[in-house]
Amino acid sequence: MQLIWLRSDLRLHDNTALAAAAARGPCVAVYLPSPEQWRSHDDAPCKIDFWLRNVASLSAALGELNIPLLIRPAPRWDEAPQVLLKVCRELKIDAVHVNEEYGLNETRRDAEVARTLDDQGIAFHSYLDQLLFKPGSVLTKTGNYFQVFSQFRKVCYGRLHVSLPSLVRAPARQAHTGIASDPVPLHIEGFAPSGEALRALWPAGESEARRRLETFVEQHLDHYQTDRDFPAKPGTSQLSAYLLAGVVSPRQCLHAALQANQGEFESGNVGAVTWINELLWREFYKHILVGYPRVSRHRAFRPETEAMAWRDAPEELAAWKEARTGLPIIDAAMRQLLETGWMHNRLRMVVAMFLTKNLLIDWREGERFFMQHLIDGDLAANNGGWQWSASTGTDAAPWFRIFNPLSQSEKFDPTGSFIKHWLTELNDLDRQQVHNPKAPCGLFDRVDYPAPIVDLGRSRARALAAFRQLPTQQRRAAEPLGDQRT
Image 1 (cartoon, rainbow, N blue to C red):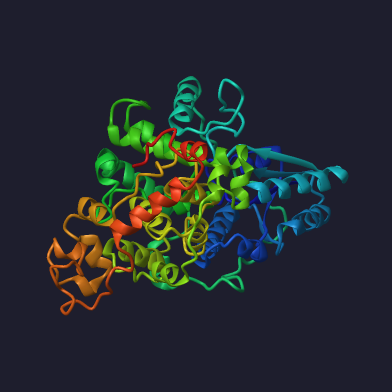
Image 2: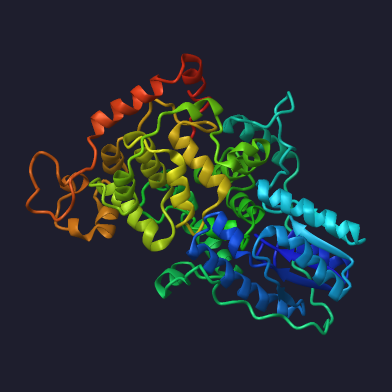
């Protein structure tokens, strides 16, 4: 009997470990809810709700193949070895199959599970699945992990031209095992279930993920390069939460993009090429997680930037969290996050740079808040994005480049449509006024909206001065090796 331990791979199709387990004989699946671990990782309630709904959907799909799904709580990951060993003994399991996960805690958990099972003569097989390339297989000529995305991307393109990762077939129906599936919990204590409105925004299941992928490729991929930065347009795939939970695989996304672009990676449809680059950005940050484990420990990728003199400004931090900064594009983005569990990528950069540069508040405060609210909160991508904005990470924005939220607002939400959707109190303003309703021209009495909590010009100067306080060699090291995301 084979056991597939499901984690962030909640799908039937193109699931490497599931296919491998089913090919070896009768198969049983298991899922381990780990609420204490999730809390320590700041996982958002909406994300846990989304995961549970996808587990339930997958359980039904597995049931059609006579593969039972067991639910075995392991509140913390250090309990996983004994929980799994007990299941293996009960069912006389020969081997456990998993798809690799990354990050320090994940790596340590899997190593301990493998050791515990091996001591009892039970095999433990892990497979590359949530990435296109195994971490450690894409390295510089000196054998180090890449720190610059453009160089990483170039090597990935070369590898993809030689060998394109193939899709894995779903397992066939197996004979009845006589083992009953466990009911999937509707919610986990400590993680409030999502409301109907949010659930409607993020339906569970592979069919929904594949529908989104097909719709994006057919209707939006051609215009992705031009539309992706405009939050009022349906220019992005809305697949990030599904990729994180493994409801769709990066291979499926890559194959769909290539099919739409006649098999080309670097030429042809510029929208398809741009989207493939975004898939590789996701890949890059996962590799960084493995190659530079300090980022899993809340440390800056560039250690010298740990000397940065961040401000302790609890009132300003609270205003940022509560969408009352007085900067409409910032507050609209934060309301989108609070109400939907998601934020447009351009706006993630804008609000992150506002917090870390204009307010000069430690990027870790923002990183944690995002994780606590994002339905697609992923350690690698979230950490990478925040450190990029704070000029402490890989390919970081130059410390002297600071987004102006007003010009970003005017450029990427020119009519104010996005702002007015989330800040209805500004609906009566025209397309010029809506970006800065408390400008000196005088709308103070007409609009029930706060004045900006910070002067953009003075706060920019303050941030530049703070970065200049770093020793010369450290400040130089904090300058970018590349700047592909502006």
